[in-house]
Image 1 (cartoon, rainbow, N blue to C red):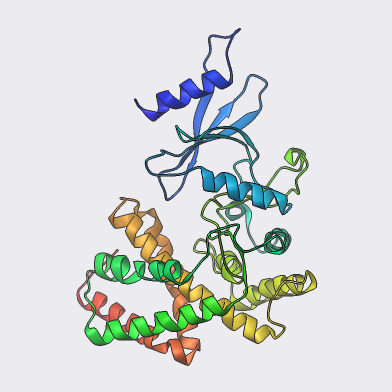
Image 2 (image 1 turned 120 degrees about the horizontal axis):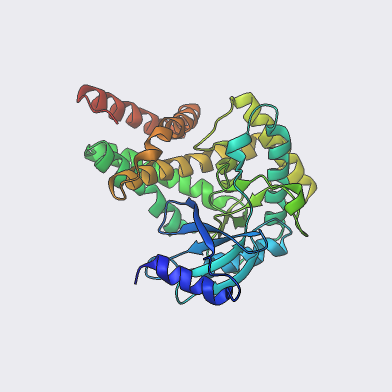
Length: 343
């Protein structure tokens, strides 16, 4: 049976329409890079709700529920869960609106929006404890890195690495992993960026802080403290000059130290960890964007690849240990140009 029919049947059971023949209005709200879909429904009283449609053969709603409870207990603004049908893969959630951080970020709004994002991130990290979420361990971090040779290099560029190039790439991977795993461990959202932070109407905050509303957290783990920060400030969808980025990161670092989080007391050391964590994420994201295009037919992410690559190049060119990857990127770019490939 089509999932749209299953969804409407579920909603009809939740909201019996005893005095109206008109069906509940259902409209697409958003989709993400997985099999999940989101719909907005309008109730008889004019209020709206979000329905998550997560096909059970592909997605599991239980991590979403678990992380939502953890983050809510931390005091941040996540969707409230009004109803659930785990067998069919449906959740009924509060509506955090249509306006993402990305929609409104500019030089005027950024200081306040990012201040709130920093504060929410600190609250999440302060609530961290081992064992509550899966570990962001060596195996998971390495699996993410391998998306780059498997999907970006092999599938997207149609290039096969030489043994020497592969050895150089693997050497950089191991250095990044050693740094990432040595960092203090906290709760990690894993996609804490401008598309997953919502600007909330102050009249719709209930008992929660206004901004940001936080979504798409179901893949949260327990891992490196700089991961979400670099997701936020080396965002695949919006970028800032490095002096502005430094200012944002310093403001987080000061807030985190005041809150007693285990950030390094030396900002230079902290910023190095931030950049090396960023390199891991950027390598992963390039692989994911390539996979979304070539496996899933979602080519809209290709336009954001140059921004992600620019972040990665900047870091690899700054640190001697990572320059083998910078040289490899040069070689791949040269081969791509010579072969006339365009994307």
